[in-house]
Length: 204
Image (tube, rainbow, N blue to C red; front, side, top):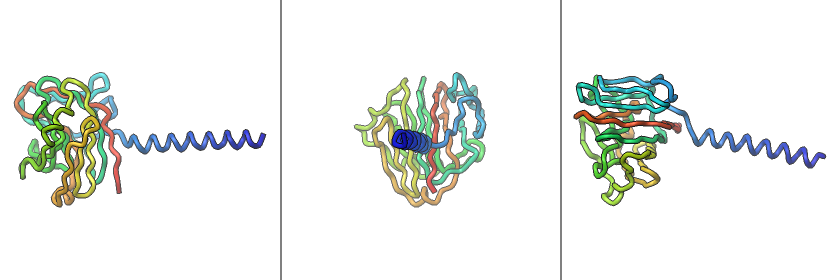
């Protein structure tokens, strides 16, 4: 009887530990699937929630638009999924600040095929810092769900798209940066991108 009790107790303990590991791996959800709580809109483009998805869409002005977290994040691993419709030109910003639709910070590119998704761009600064090697461009699945992972640890940024490491880049300016995470809709009009499962694991 004691042996059965011990085995049962061990099984429960292992289940609890496994649940803890799963929760730790999943991280904190930045999007609740219901509304835009915790986010701040910049510009007049469309950001809305539909069927549990976060959607950005060009508005009448066809200008740049951003949706940023209200919190700032330094060292983290961010995972999200996106599906591009129409043009699909967007991006994921990190350590970024905003004055209207002028952004200071860095972008991990989300763009149509052959347009360097997963590369790193510095807005209103040095421009392209690093692009993926051409053979990695095929990692993007236009019109399907794509999973992107962005690791920012001090000055080093590493990106993955559908399990393929796209770039790794180390830069002291990024290391010293402070700011929010944000999603972008590019100017030009005719753009629609869907987002889901936006989760972050922070590192002290």
